[in-house]
Image 1: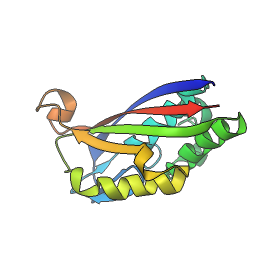
Image 2 (image 1 turned 180 degrees about the horizontal axis):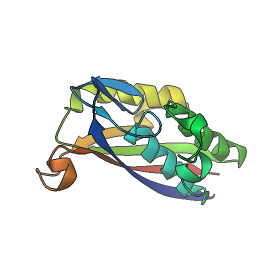
Image 3 (image 1 turned 45 degrees about the vertical axis):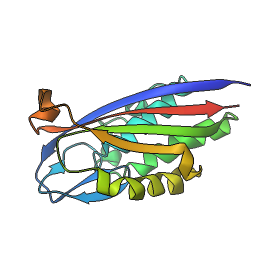
Image 4 (image 1 turned 120 degrees about the vertical axis):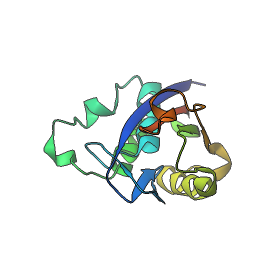
Length: 158
């Protein structure tokens, strides 16, 4: 059995807006996240975790921010590409763990919907998908409310 584990990390700063995209879900908030795509730190982190498990670089190598075709793109495109690469190489994605790091907005009320969206996108059982949140105790850029960070782990099995 070939078991691979990958980690991903992403950050985006706040800017103008009325919601943030997190794990494929539009969470109402008085600001948005800035980025070349829709700035979904959750999907970006999980995407990078899958690429990491495959030793296939990172999201920027597959979808360069310098390429205008990705401007404003929905991040599920990136995630399904990474998952498709894993499948094409004979791997099954068996587990995803995602931790959103921010003071606000509150993540807890949205985690079940986020897990459901990930289940839809990845085709794995809900009990193999974890989405949770923590604060940084008001320390650093997330603690000052300047943005959101996320770390994720993905497990692939062949």
